[in-house]
Length: 158
Image 1 (spheres, rainbow, N blue to C red):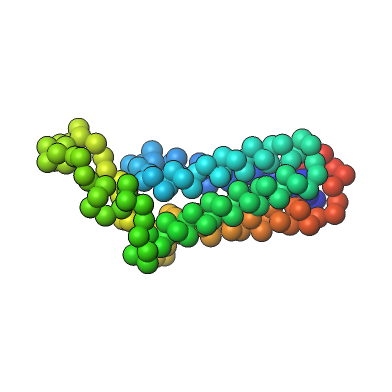
Image 2 (cartoon, helix red, strand yellow; image 1 turned 180 degrees about the vertical axis):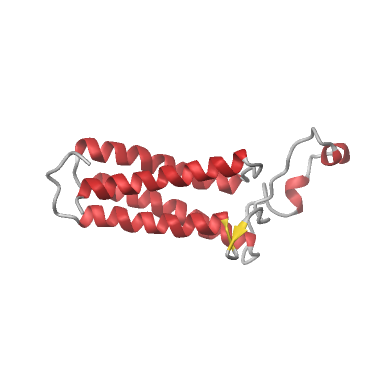
């Protein structure tokens, strides 16, 4: 495979993961704070892919690999919070994230929707969305690294 094809696949993978996240959100699974954190490196990876396809070189795919690795690491951390392996941020884990909300807020249908980072809202094959994001992101990181390692850099088209 050419470097540009690998870059295109990696950027498209991040786009697909973001599209999936927004689809789940539209289906009624609002994201917690850590879910939102996992989205930012995917946005960066898409922008990096566009720049790498335009300008070539190896430094941009290195940044793409770092972006994919970052969201993968956040996904692993989030998985650990969900499974109780370690504590998550107090802003979205445990009882402290409910501080400041009145009983009426908690019982009201129109009140704020509290999405806890330490609760799994959806899973497939015993893996949560955070776990799937981590696995897919590390796979994308491997694709980015392959793009870095690919010597053939002459083609600017996909």
